[in-house]
Image (cartoon, rainbow, N blue to C red; front, side, top):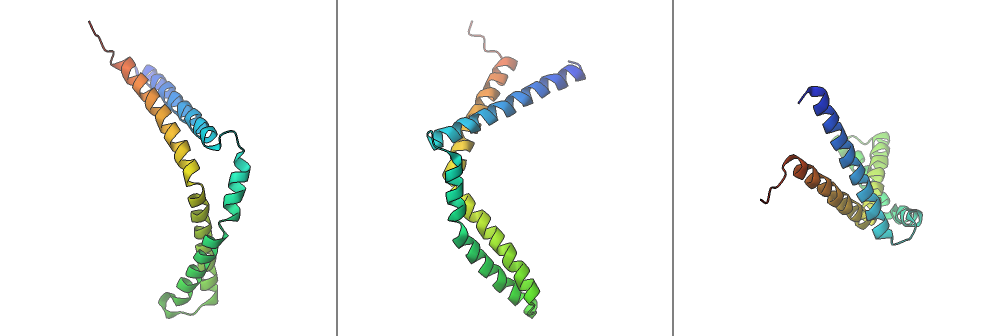
Length: 128
């Protein structure tokens, strides 16, 4: 097999795998939402993530204030903002974990289906 044919074949296979993964993710989202909209779910999780953000900001400020015994207000502020961002991100991720699991499961299932088809094309089974 020439390099050009091999690269075209692999490119097409990669495109097929990517497309099936995206289709699976889309169907996983639809299965989880069950006809509902995504925006209300995301806005609810954003609104409910302020508690982890506050906890992260407080921990970050304490860590920045206590670092090396240097009592710098600027350092404490920067660590507080960083801790708040990490806490907010963790809160949003935690609130949407079931949606992410559904999307990942369906995407993985579709990718496996395409991989199995590709393997059977390369390794045909002869029952005779």
